[in-house]
Image (cartoon, rainbow, N blue to C red; front, side, top):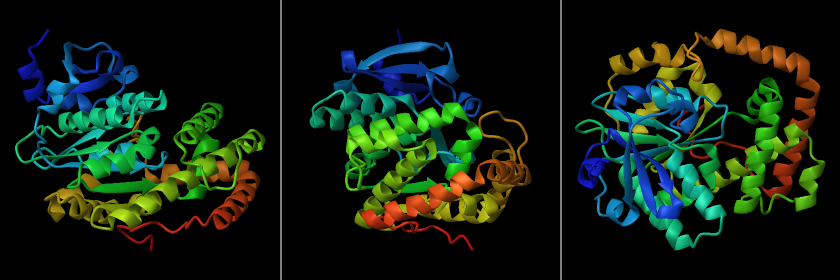
Length: 342
């Protein structure tokens, strides 16, 4: 096992998991280059790697906050993995794609942990993730959207942190769910179950029994509405200087414009040449999960096929979701938009 001082000092010893039973964080060796090789920092993608050992949470809390830590929250199916990879710019920022320790902390909370213990674990996690990979670099962490109910706590505990809520417009989101098939239809139900337990669905006009009567795409729409309301309320509380939103369709239509706005929001120093290089580079020309070539034209063609096959159902759910939003007072406009869609 590696000594605690080394594990805490070197960001290549990545704080991979929160070990609830031991009240400790488990460190795995992840050189910077490995981050770009996997879509998510999860066991299923990382495989067997060197474990440095477990460090008690109290010891992790002795680490002072390091470089700037910002967040990329997202709705799912919106290019967030692509974007966090685009923000991996040595000397400027390091992007972290869905660190598992946040999922562990959410599980800790859902199993009934004292809120003070949850906040303590979250504090330690953010101290560990904020360790810069290079001198002067910021860290942009993209949690899984399972973590979204935790966003108010994370932002409250890190008053210097800034966040972007990247979202797919509702129709685009529903098309993605239909396109990805049964596995994704099951996943949106699992997501909604978690949000129900977190209390995120309160006020949308449903009782528990109602969810059993909804179709898969209706369930997906409710999850989308819950996330949109959550970040609209948080954006109103924090203001545009701390939390802004970004429409994924607008980002993909003009990556350079979106990256310029994101860099400005996070305070990242990137000139026009660097931004153009990223916008025209592999991050926006490859499928973020498979690495295969994937152009905006190919994406549009894939989505057109889904519209042809599921257009009637999607249209009906869109009308229904608008009625739900109107009844619950959910504003469908983007909160504090970074850029317009025009």
